[in-house]
Length: 147
Image 1 (cartoon, rainbow, N blue to C red):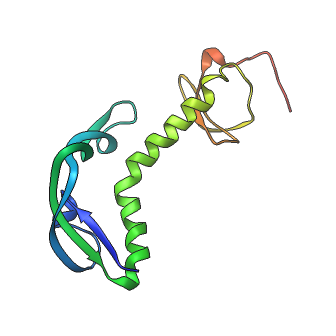
Image 2 (cartoon, rainbow, N blue to C red):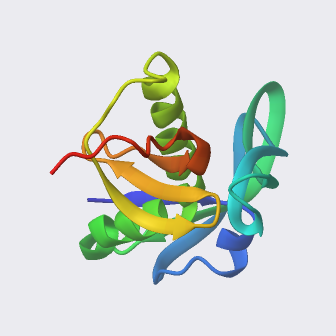
């Protein structure tokens, strides 16, 4: 499979894969902007930082490099780039899914596993769909015991 990757930013000077060919490229109707939140290398879960990403803007242009992967390495390169470039987006998507799932379920009971302890409560992961969060000391019922 022949695969070209549009590179800008760190992909230009550090693609992270063996490049078979490269050419100067222009991506129409996109520009770089601080439009993606990230907890990797900047920010925290509670306060993500902003990183540059491609933002659709009619009439704009983004200049970069077209990088071709070796044909026999295309699948590996795609997997590598997904891990490298989409890790923040995946975490944001998981957090959004969890928030939407739990929005109408506040106060409901779920089976879960305690994954950590703190002075303020316990960290719990619900068994399905694997939503995690904290149950504060004030929300823990102390008069009820189940085997």
